Length: 246
Ligand SMILES: Nc1ncnc2c1ncn2[C@@H]1O[C@H](COP(=O)(O)OP(=O)(O)O)[C@@H](O)[C@H]1O
Ligand SMILES: CC(C)(COP(=O)(O)O)[C@@H](O)C(=O)NCCC(=O)O
Ligand SMILES: [K+]
Image (cartoon, rainbow, N blue to C red; front, side, top):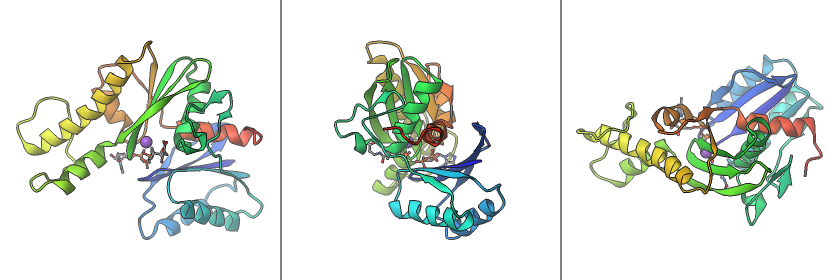
């Protein structure tokens, strides 16, 4: 059994992999006061893992606390914390400073190259929206970062006098009330960003979506997409199979 952990800027996601098969993901808000107790409760009741692999774009202190918890629960557990690098698993990082690419994006690129080979565009619609392109030969072409849906709405609420935050369903039609105007405006900003980015590339790319708002985005895009919320976990699994990747 392998324990896989993906820490984003909003939530911690974890799952277990048994012979490469991923169990359902557990989503947790790591900013809640009882987060560590709740996670410990969960982990006390799982089969002892041989390895724990962690991908985090959040505070390093959080990763260290999780490693401490894992080591106290399962002494001798192997801890794997991949870092962004110039190349790994036949994928070449396009960043001028490869270590600066978010490790979640780096792992998703490696998983896409393995499970969706070809020219692929990966969009992770989480706290931020990240868009990354990879060619069939494994070369990353670069990417884009924009605020996610919740952040766009929060920033409107925080920086205006008259715009309140609402979690109502969003669409892409023209609205006649403020809440819908905001929800639809922000959703269309995200959908338009993805569609425009794809349209501006010199060739066609297969689109793979992930992240907490991936499904919402998929429903409102005018282009076909595949939903895969496990890309980061799948990327982590590579490092568990082969620790010597560079
Ligand atoms: N139950 C939920 N709790 C929190 N965010 C959610 C939930 N359902 C959908 N979302 C959306 O998902 C986004 C977070 O996605 P996620 O992939 O977990 O982000 P991150 O990887 O940045 O932590 C939020 O910004 C929000 O818009
Ligand atoms: C862009 C991100 C904030 C996305 O994080 P997320 O929305 O998954 O929480 C993260 O991948 C990150 O911190 N990246 C480092 C900068 C970069 O990738 O260029
Ligand atoms: K993201």
